[in-house]
Image 1 (cartoon, rainbow, N blue to C red):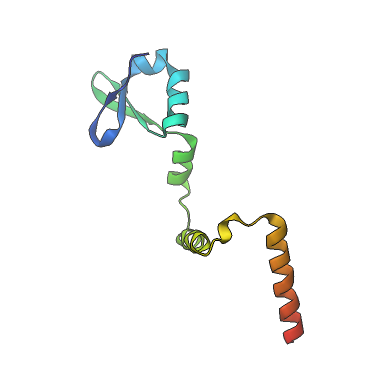
Image 2 (tube, helix red, strand yellow):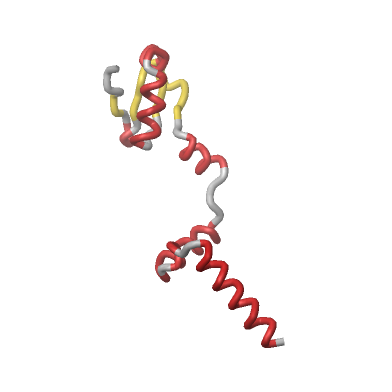
Length: 101
């Protein structure tokens, strides 16, 4: 497959003929390189092909509070806790609350 041309903002541009002939390879490239593709017909942009990850980000963006919690977790080093560690922390917190009543 010919390498797609790079358009403005680093977006790859392919013709409808290239997209049709090399669809499987384009999908693999989207998944591996995390780029979007603009599909042109007769030199005019007609469609955009996105990875599922990029589509989900556009369709259902992460709520601001989750982003903040994620950043705080990374800063505190709690983003790598295992499930059993998290469960022990929750149980200890619940015991503390019960004892404070």
